[in-house]
Structure formats: structure tokens, C-alpha cells
Length: 142
Image (cartoon, rainbow, N blue to C red; front, side, top):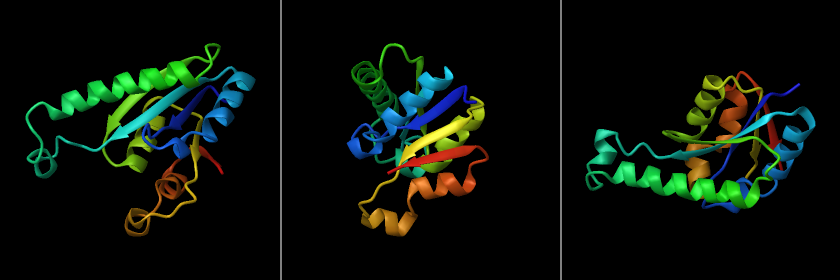
């Protein structure tokens, strides 16, 4: 039923994966699917944003996140699950949907954040946007 499963992960926020990861792993094992762990960075290359950071900052940020994500995968994803690391720039919900479309994913598994922060009131929760805009199935884990 599923061949490619996308799991968005905020490496600084355990609640973004603590419950969703075991669900995604179970689905991968059940269906023989591959897991695509996605981390989204802000788009530092935008002229307005980039002007506030030193030259080469975006590259260093990507390298640091790549290393952290590979360590996350080594520590938390079982060896019997085929996994791919994906790091993208941009808006979290838009980037998650773009990755899912690009790799032809069957399912997005993501956590629902119960703690409302000020940014959630202004921007709206990313999970809600993914659910409303994705063309593929989305599983929200609470």
C-alpha cells in the first residue's frame, strides 16, 4: 500500500517526531516502504533574509543540519528500515509538500503540536497546512 513515507522532523523539537517516528517505522516495516526524513531550514538565500547573515552561512547551516540529521537517523531509525535524509529550504509546510511530490511519496506522517505558540496563531500550524494542501494522504499522530 505504501512505498515511500515522508517524516518531517524538527531536530530541535522532540515533539515533532517522538510519537510520529514509531508510527512511520511501523508502517515502513509493514509495507516494506522507505522512510524519507525531512528537515526544513529557513531560506537564508533570500535577499532580505540573507543580508543579515555572513557570507557562506547557508552552506554551513546545511552542513551542520546534515550532520545532525544523520546522527538523528543513526540513533532513532532502526537499521532494518531503508531511510533517506532530505534537507530543504523554505516554508515548512510548502517544502514538505514539495518533497513528497518530488519523490512521489504515498504518505506523510507528522506530529500534531498540542502546545500553541504565538507563531502558530500568526502563521497557522504547519500540520494543518500540509493536510489542507497535500494531494497525498497525511497521517497526523497525536
